[in-house]
Each structure stands twice: as C-alpha cells, then as structure tokens.
Image 1 (tube, rainbow, N blue to C red):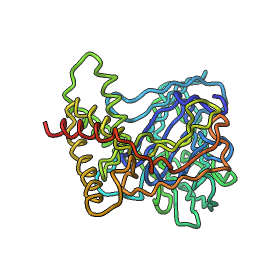
Image 2: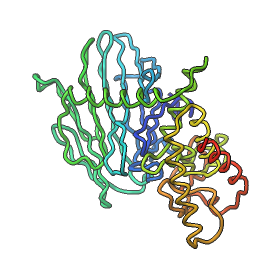
Image 3: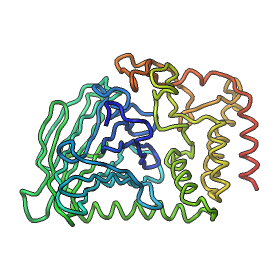
Length: 377
C-alpha cells in the first residue's frame, strides 16, 4: 500500500449518523464522530503523519488482501492471505435509529478461515483534525482516549473465555496503542470495539460480538427487502442504494453529498472541498433514486426536513432557500483552512466548512419540484 492509498481502495461502513472509510490493507483512515460533519478522529487519508488511523492487518508485509461486502449488508470484509493462513476482519457499525447520540461503535471482528494468523492492531487517534491533545489510559481490557474538551474514545477488547493468556494484550505506543492477536483456523469471537463516549474499557464476550453482527446484518437485509427493484442489475443497484442510505443522517432524513472532506478533483490540485453537508439539489436527486426503488420512507423523512427549512424562510429568515445545510438543518458553514494538514497526496489547502453555502443556485427549485412530485405519487 502506498503512503496514500487510491481513493478507490476504500470501503465505507456507517451507522446512519456517521461513517468510516476502511482501506484494503485494513486501515480506518477517515472517521468523524459523532456526526458526518463533526471533527475527525482519524484522517490519515488527508495527512499520513498527523491525521491518525486505526489499523488491523497481519504481522509483517508479506500478504495479499481483498475487500468485499457481506452480501446484502453494509458490513465490510477485508480478507488477508499469507503463507501461513487466510484471515479476515469484518468491519461494521451497529445501526442507530432514532435520536442523535454521542455513542457510536466501530466493530472489528476477526476470523481465521485457514491455517494461522497473527493480527497486529494499531490505534492512533488524532482528535479535531489533529489539533487537539489527548490522554491515554491503558487497562487489561483495552484503553480510553480523552481530550480536554470532553471527547472520549474507548477501545474494548475480547479474548478467550477460559485462557487468560489468550486475551488481547494492549500496550501503549506514543499517543496511541498497539496489540497483537494470534489466532488459528476456526477460531472466532475475537476482535475489538471502538466506542465514542463508551466509558471504561471492558472485556467483550463472543456472544456480544456475534449478536451485534447478527443485528446489523438483519437491519440491512430487512431494509433491502423493501426495495421493489427486480432488474438484471440487482446487485449493483442494491449496493448503490445502500451507499445512499449510509450517507443519510437518520435523525433528520438529510443526505450528505459525501462522507469526506478535502479529497481533490485531481491529485495535487486545489479544488478540495468539504462535502459533508446536504445540498438541496443533490439530495433531491438521491431521494429520486431511492423512490425509483420503492424506498419511500427516506423520501418522507427528507420532505419533513425540507419543509422545516421552507418554514424557516416563511417565518422571517432572510433570503431564499440556501443551496446547502448541515444535517440538523443549521446553515452556519463557515469555511476554514487546516494549514497543518498536507492533504491527500499533497493536495492543499484542506478545507472544512463550505463558503459556497452563501451562493444562489436557482436550479435547486427544479430538482426540488421533481422530488416533491415523485414523493406524492
């Protein structure tokens, strides 16, 4: 893997309030928490040295990897093949339905299908786009990272139920931690959970990991079962639909244009914008696509959110509808430059916020009318 992986060498996982990117070498290199538009916890995608990351991979560099999704789910498998065995990391975020919360879980479940494999775990958070300092407290069951501003990340670990020596052994590594987990063929129930605002670290039992995986798979399969699409491109269409769903903020129904910021239109270029917001036009097109698959609940939620924005204007807010908003409906998107980050493949500047929110874009009304028409049919 190069210093900066290809953007295409990523999978996305999420819980409908935020999302994480995972590279094909098992690295979470972009994750904002607790919302899509919150400051990052990991963003080595934008600065390999200063951005922070969460990596699980085989010990050593002699491996081949491949990524795929568990069928009909948003659960990502990164499979590693070495001379000694075949192992995989199942990455997912348990879905959160309902009100916004600061507690989010990123589950990394380990399995070995053949032979043996020793996984190395590295966690190096860098809060607030790498600007905030944090403390590290390591325990027998994991670790907790704390910032002065009150943000916490807890790493919970799992191990064998009978043999204490088989538990994950965690060690301090600078401002982060590292660990190794040795596994053999057929062994499961091992893994880690990274949880925001998760309290003290604890030992996670195999049954809990399996229940989280089962519940997450059931959600995605039940959601896809609502689709009315039966055409020849079903696999690609459903995968695209799940991606749109992953980028929709469930508490309000507002889709974001992307789960990332700072990625360039061309490597080394300057057009590196923050897209973690809801564009009225783009969101309307996304909703039209979901409506075409018979997924009407998403359209209903978005229309309620949109009506609230229109009501604000009718209630005295100055000017027409803005072209973009935050997922909670607020419109403060002040743009700032993160000069301390080098950017993806040196693509600077890295920006957060978006000054284009003050622009006037008349075609948003045409797309909006189309979406409203389809939603009412």
